[in-house]
Amino acid sequence: FASGELSHEGEANPNYGHTSDTLTDEQRETYSKAAIKRVLDGVSGYKTGHLTGLYDAKKAASPVKFKSSWELAIMMWWDASPDVVAYSYEPDVIRYDVGRRAVPDFFVTYADGHETYVEVKPSAIQALPEVAERLFKVRAYLTMVHKSYVLVGNNEIDDVKASLGKEFDDAVKRYKDGCEDVGHCMP
Image 1 (tube, rainbow, N blue to C red):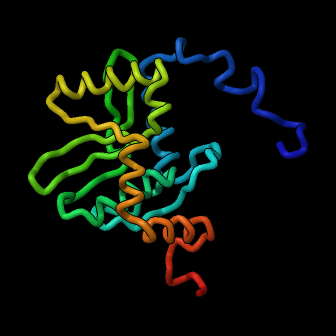
Image 2: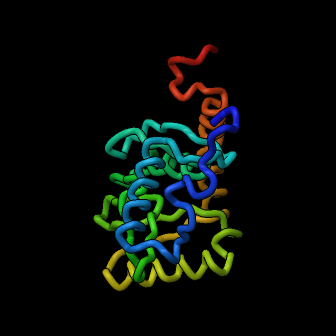
């Protein structure tokens, strides 16, 4: 592959000619599960340019592989909040329409017993017509099945980052420097 003699392009690729319109529901499910597994394993198949890493979450069942500084910020904030009991990262596949699925970023359980799905996404992306429509449909479906759904955008994340202050800035620096575990970083 590195020499260019072999490639994944053309008819030799098992996905050649397939589009989302030609996939069966079973194929969509298989692809969704494989994509979720890649994300959970920290192998997303592409580089986003976002801060990524493994966060030792205090209120999640295990360390969480995050894909953005925003996800890191919200987890740090939840870990510090007495109102949050637990959270899980990309916990469920939500089937909100025929052939349509969504994977919310988080599922959060609060001290008062309230539970909600949380999607962390820049406000400008939330406002894109195709994204806004999908988010609306996901919210409508979850409301129909008596589940809560919260969108977190720029304003909320700015407030979270301000609340965390230097703690967040230091954490970002550690991840950027490859020092996720403070014990392994040199002063």
